Length: 360
Image (cartoon, rainbow, N blue to C red):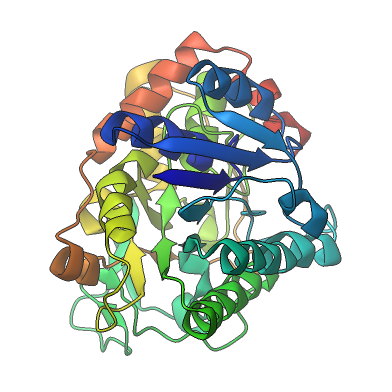
């Protein structure tokens, strides 16, 4: 089987490539990456050693797909992954749309031409901001949890947000481009007869991630805490109680292999939620406590109690559908993810500079 991974030199793309090679014999992997992300050249070097052929190209440029070999499947791990992209004054809204939507069109045209299956690594941020920001929570220790006995809106369960949650705008420009990409992917697959799977992932985290304050928060926070870099809790009273779940991308491998082996099932939902779930969730304040236990105390400045645009207090993915249909669940415990990030941080003292985090 031949596979193309876009964004292969990023954290998610490179992790999927390495673990897929180990998991499946006879697999040939090609990669496409524009190498604009700081640190991506490190992953490129390691992937080349594994025999993966990497094409330097940009998903926004249709002609960059013309010279790519034909494959059986394309996994899209290329995107601007920040919910603040296009609205933070640091990035262009047009460029975000070109990356996350126009790039998808070029990939789908490539799949149409080669009759290749398409797997989109999508995001939890396709869900509506307003109901997410209004989720009723209460403080438990140093984190938020769903308020006991609160009425839960459609798509919200004690296990988290499921696929029935509202996708009505506003979602953020980032979320809207990913949601539009999902719709286009399903339409292309149906109209041009190639398989499409859409995996809505929560926060993906692990060692070697290019962590920044606006993305890769687990990796950024641990690296910054270790270096005694300035840190602050933003929004929700400035206490750091906001909660996210974490999933290591290598845990996607069994699911991806099953999806690529299933090309004809019409009665299986083609959109599923994936994440660490309620057992792999943690607040920023709890991450700080974990860091203090490992690295020693470092004060977090409580400087801004007001939420930013698109901030939400609690986001955990309910992956019940994936478990029911694909017999999938996360395998890497949260504590192991944190430990692996910390060990990598200790071995790479310049990681914040390499990943460009200190530019933010």
